[in-house]
Each structure stands twice: as structure tokens, then as C-alpha cells.
Image 1: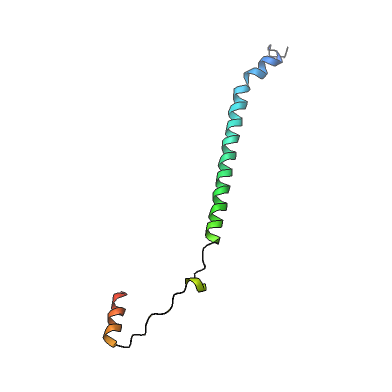
Image 2: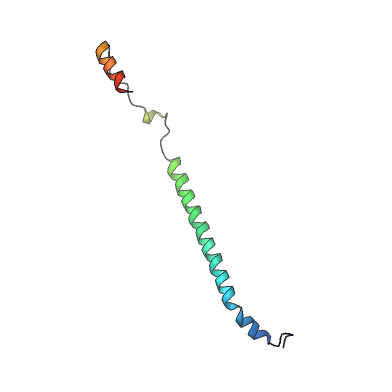
Length: 80
């Protein structure tokens, strides 16, 4: 018997719910960390496979040269 009057086995049986709850929190935190890690890897892979802004694949050919002043002014006024 221990100094508190209870045998060692009874004391060990009484704190098992605390150990289970503590283990569940550790499992939950571990699952959240793993989920965040997977999300970060997916985002990095998604953004690294996109085309660069100034790459040749993303550049379109220039439009026709407009020499008529009225047409050119009409187009420029649309860009307000």
C-alpha cells in the first residue's frame, strides 16, 4: 500500500481517462499538422507548375497597327 492508503493498481486505474484524453489531443494535433503539411505541399506544387508571366507561352502576338487617328483615340478612351 502507498502512503495515501490506496494500492498502486487502483491509482493507476484512476488516471487512465486522463491518459486517453491526452493521447487523443496529441492525435488531433498530429492530424492537423499533417493536414497543413499536405496542403502546403499541394499549394507549392500548384503554383510552381503555372506558367511564368513573361514566358514565351503566355505572350500573345501583337494586334494590327492602327494608323487612323480616330480609331486610335477611340481605343485609348476605352482604357479609362
